[in-house]
Image (cartoon, rainbow, N blue to C red; front, top):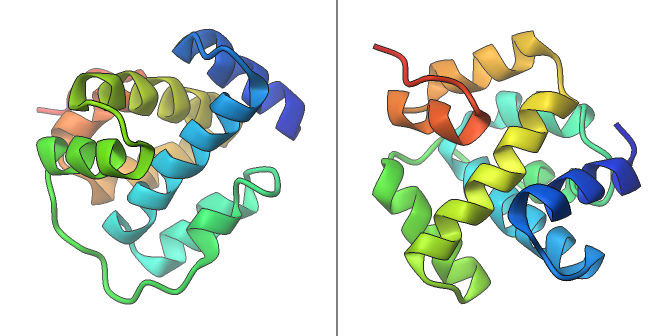
Length: 128
């Protein structure tokens, strides 16, 4: 998926006012996702996303960090300067677009590294 298509989807799903706002939200969510997954998984995901969105996933972060659903949303909120409720909206808009933009196998690999309640961000039912 090209950058303009990706951002148009995020803008529609997140009801952002501008492309710049959709890009900022996308970068913030991916920035928070990157340390939650292995560096190899982050690199694989980055390879399937358009530049400059891949940048947040390509930074060296070391070992994956452990934080759950609420911790993820708190970090997104801190990154965007928004409330946690808005951060959930951002995560849903961006990660559901990621799920549509990358291969199904890539999404499966991501979800295998994340808590089951993260599946909803990707537009998938929570794993049992």
